[in-house]
Image 1 (cartoon, helix red, strand yellow):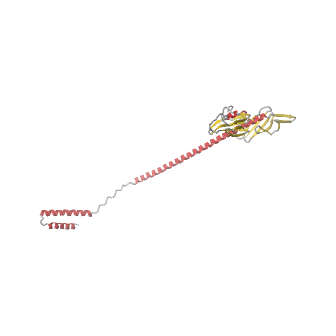
Image 2: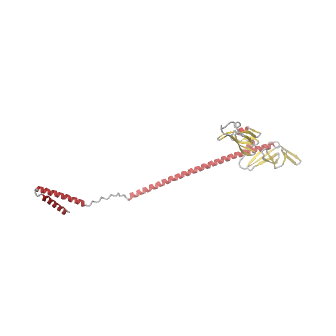
Image 3: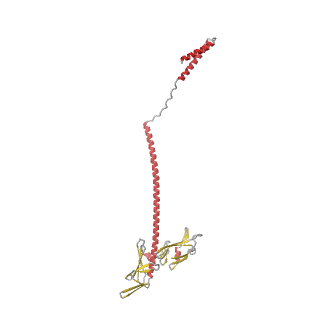
Length: 326
């Protein structure tokens, strides 16, 4: 490379100085200096071009200690596990809440069913109790009305009831069609009985006196002696209770009576009782007979639940129809 540069300088000097032989010494020196400067510049340029570029320093890696890496991994694992535990707890709480709601709903339904069953049972028992009281009143009234003739000729005793001869275990039919059994004599008392699968009524009376009744329950629905003696009660004689059955005589009891339509009804139990004549009610299902119009512009209905002849009867009459009870 240096040899080539020297040859180039000689060629340049020869061409420059050979062309102009009249140059002065000073001019010649200046030419030589400029030629040398040129040569040095070319040499430096060539050297710089041929030199290999120095490689870039490698990136410095941030070194971390093994303990720091383990701590970071442990914290990350703990955070993941904590998130799983929180999610599982939330899911379990939601499931528990749903289960509690189902249990509460089930208990509520069971309680409502139990209360409904108890209410239905109480209503049925009240109806059966009213029926029995009406039957007792009917049977007692019938037994009290029996005309008894007791005669004896020697050792032979003859008993007639309502002019018909009777013997022990004879069946006598009451006003309402119930079969009353004459069970015989007990000293001065004439004894009678009436029996159903649920209860039994025993009565005894003297020749001219009134009967005494006793009821034996077979299903837990008891009739007190006070109820037997007082018979079917109207609201006034039963202490003003609105739910008390109303007797119209001859063993007939009005348990419930209402007149109206849709959700508007009037209690007409006492009104019907006041219309009773000889144990019967003859009237008409209209606003005039039922104490007024409870709901204008609607076709009304009379609904009555009563006991007659030992049976509970429920009947309805549309507005304008004739009503006959029993």
